[in-house]
Length: 148
Image (spheres, one colour):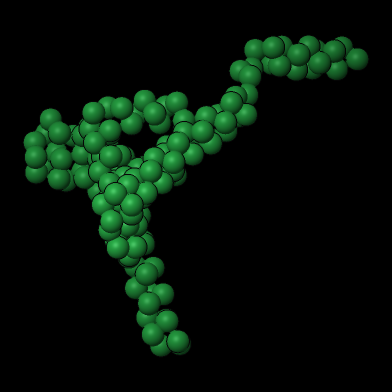
């Protein structure tokens, strides 16, 4: 009986001292920031389509390039890290998160010089993703060519 009482006291103490879950709060932040990034992307797309009058096939390319540039610029200025701390996965999922994953390692090692610092670390994190994506697309393309 004493053993059960101690176990219950221990569980009560753990419940008191354990940090409270912030999952719901983080989900809301991720949703809002990710949605805001997507809304900015839509505004850029509308600008390219209606103001710059780009052909439909070029609008998506322009939007992607601009968002990657914006993500890289904000990473270089140190702003994207703050957005990431606030939003978590909401800042990683859009294409700006890819730009951040390319630029951040390079920025960390810029004190080592242009070649050994920036260039050597530019694709440290995103490199495996790119290799996997290119390799997969080649395999799918070959399968499509042979079977299709």
